[in-house]
Image 1 (cartoon, rainbow, N blue to C red):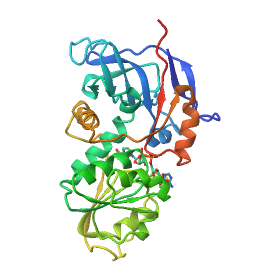
Image 2: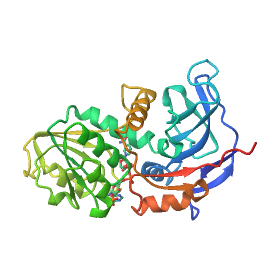
Image 3: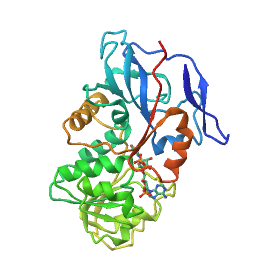
Image 4: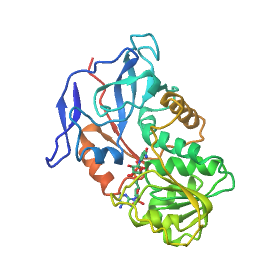
Amino acid sequence: MLAWTPTEGADDPIALTEVDAPRPGPSEVVVQVAAYSVNRGETFLLEAPRPGWRPGRDVAGTVVQAASDGSGPPVGRRVVGHPAQGGWAEQVAVPVDAVSELPPDLEPTVAAALPLAGLTALRLLRTMGPLAGRRVLITGAAGGVGHYFVELAAAQGAVVSAVVSTPARGRRLLELGAHELLTSVEDGNGPYDVVAESVGGAVLGQAWSRLAQRGLLVWFGQASREPAQLDFFDWRGGASGTLRKFDASDGDVPDALDLATLVRLVAGGRLHPEVDRVRDWRATPEVLRALLAREVRGNAVLTVPAPSA
Ligand SMILES: NC(=O)c1ccc[n+]([C@@H]2O[C@H](COP(=O)([O-])OP(=O)(O)OC[C@H]3O[C@@H](n4cnc5c(N)ncnc54)[C@H](OP(=O)(O)O)[C@@H]3O)[C@@H](O)[C@H]2O)c1
């Protein structure tokens, strides 16, 4: 079968390559991938790929081989999945505890945008606790995680300030419930009870200085690739607060359950994946360039042609 594999150093970081078919473990299904999404974090991993690693954590498609231990969905079921790797391919093995079945009206091009960004947003919110009436700041809000986070936080009753590079990139965030758009953290009045920060560099320190007394700053990424700058003696904002480093994979709820929650919210019209573009999977290198150039709002989705009969 064909799959995108790391090239390490060529003009493009990936090449479409013939690879072995997936060899699933006893509690894994094989999914025929119809669509997948790409994430900024994966572009970072492509810079220094581990031997044997292939990118791809967000897939939607059809089960073509059930798990041999009898668990999980049978052959023919449409699913969304969060494999550990290898989803930018015609087929991928996914643990049954990282798949959720799709209702008939949820298209793979929408469902594929859910796993990594959606799980991250959901788990950020769980980490933050109840948000009704709380003032929340999110940086990097125009991205994949940002769109889900804003809609889910606003639905809880949070007053969400969303930081974006231009108002145009935040337009959808206002429709999803953001209270205001900021083009710089420095323009935010604060104080914020809770901050979700994923840009790094000077931005983390700027956000910290707008945190309310005993506020919570959840640090979940470094899109700028610049190490975060903090100054203990910067006394703007609260004199004390909590800084929490966050990893979406460190959770108590299995991926399958959280994926099912995301699917239920989408199917019920309470969560709206922002799919900026859908392209044939052969355009993956071009889409990665757009992602790195900050041209993608929300998520980009790639479609994989159905196998010929
Ligand atoms: N901790 C975890 O478990 C976890 C899980 C998922 C993602 N992450 C991290 O969280 C961050 C957001 O993920 P994502 O998938 O939502 O990424 P994304 O879709 O690429 O969005 C990132 C956003 O960051 C903004 N940004 C601001 N300064 C930037 C800069 N110097 N370079 C690049 N982007 C900049 C961009 O905003 P504009 O569009 O307004 O320019 C962009 O929309 C990434 O750093 C990712 O690695 C962490």
